[in-house]
Image 1 (cartoon, helix red, strand yellow):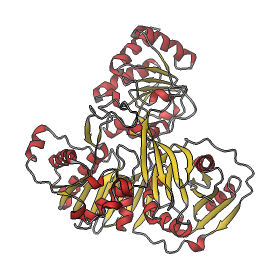
Image 2 (spheres, helix red, strand yellow):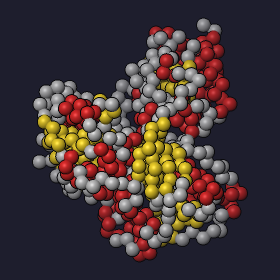
Image 3 (spheres, helix red, strand yellow):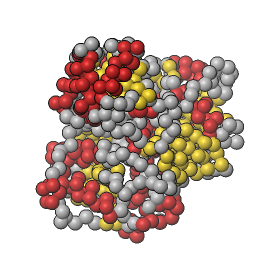
Image 4 (cartoon, rainbow over the protein chains, first blue to last red):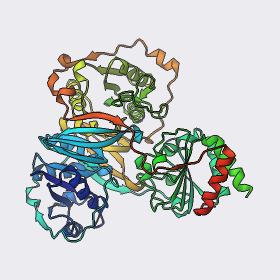
Length: 322
Length: 261
């Protein structure tokens, strides 16, 4: 029987949403597979999460070790190699921890590796068929993955629908004793919290959000003028912060702020999943982009194929004339 | 400090609209504009800045075909001292594990204190750096957006969720994948490229590296891409069409109805 193991990331004793999504992914891999949750950490938080997971998973493996109190991917990898069967299917989230852990884990487990899975299309013998995206979401691909010697995969959070977890009636298996030597050559020091900016974009009902399409720092002014007309705030996607045109606190995305506006104006933003991961609460999304194939049009409510540098000033004028 | 930066020639997502070929199994690559992977420029810039501070040299390396030489030259125009092209028909169709194995073979012939790559490239997997580190038994950190060089170790910041930064101390040698925004990569002009046009870039294949041809390339790949497709748009956006004035009129109605005005 196929054995699937799913790594549960958690913060402050609460599992991340992906914990409810793995069971859906696992069913799409192999309906008859066994699914085991894996939780690593230390102390009370770990026990809380492990017990919580028994309502969703029939088996929950916990690994408790003082060195795992913070999830240093190097430490977690060493522990997992000693606990997870070598030919297993191992799932973790495609987040900043999963990306740190998983590629090296596949080497140490001598498994195949596949990243950022957005869909599965079942097992054919030892070949797993899967779907992922390339080129910033512009194209998708079907993949064939040979899992005869196991596979480590990251799954994209939000891609698999959550299960209603309530009554799996699972049990916790303590494998702390199997973790072995977890000494590593990377030491976690501290978390440096993000600096607060001059404007709190999370408090605004309407965001005028700009991306690469703004082209030049001087053009940010036209976005600000539209925002002023709409009583909105200017936010942005990652390239604008990388170019140092706006401060980090204005960035929407998984590596920036999570926003829940009523209306989100995506101006010249292609719509990578990392960006969209920061847009929550199902806002009304308006996308303006000169590329008719921009992925943003798949998720927007209203799409307009225009160059924002021409379109924004005209829209501003029309709003001011209301 | 001897630094190796792994780079890749990729289709430029800012310059291309991607179309499928007539068979529908690959991109239409005839008119694609290629450039160096955006993340790699940040890695090379960071390497140059470290060497400017503490001394040493920067080598850029890639696995690719003849055309990949141009991205090595571009990074050398930025200031990298050496370039190495790993190229062999047997490398074609390699998956991430294959690419990492090819790089490892060359790395073991040198003596590098620090190995860097971009955090991800065109395939969006972000896999080669972590694999390489595990194969070499070096410590690894991904998504690095800050580096401070110490004596025999380095302190690195990793970009994690919510704009927070995870600080780590790492032993050397180590492997880091570099996130965009860590620095501002310098501009490279035509003159800069011309200056390095004649520099020798060694090309190495399976026999030079001692790599078993069956363990890399398509033969050794456990993951294979079957086709490319453009995902079903699903419900997708309601596209507003007409003259700009007409579009704006429709948009304003919708914004009013949804609390935007």
